Image 1 (cartoon, rainbow, N blue to C red):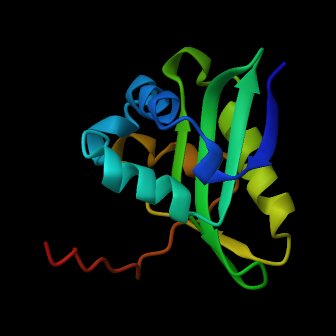
Image 2 (image 1 turned 60 degrees about the vertical axis):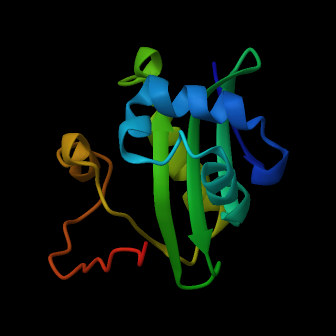
Image 3 (image 1 turned 90 degrees about the vertical axis):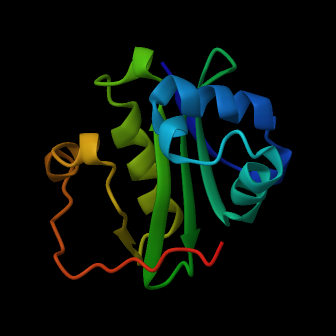
Length: 134
């Protein structure tokens, strides 16, 4: 059985995290080839949950939270080999437990839109995105 635990993003092996993002397909939508930027993303998250099985990183939830009102779950990545086994649910639960008073907000990858209602999320139709200046 895998284990989910809070980790310090700065202490993660960035190549291991990149490999996970590729294995989960999230690497297609994140700047994994820009290692400095990607490493800054992982380091900058103030709530990172890692799921490991026998030492192997099989999932990660990368969030920003104030701990009191809202947690933005910016990335949830599960190795495709381990999807549909409850790893994502375990990661989301660990995020909830880390900031139990905060609601979780996320933007879904197109392929995951149908997943989130099954784990208790409700659709919110007034989200807005302003792209980076670069």
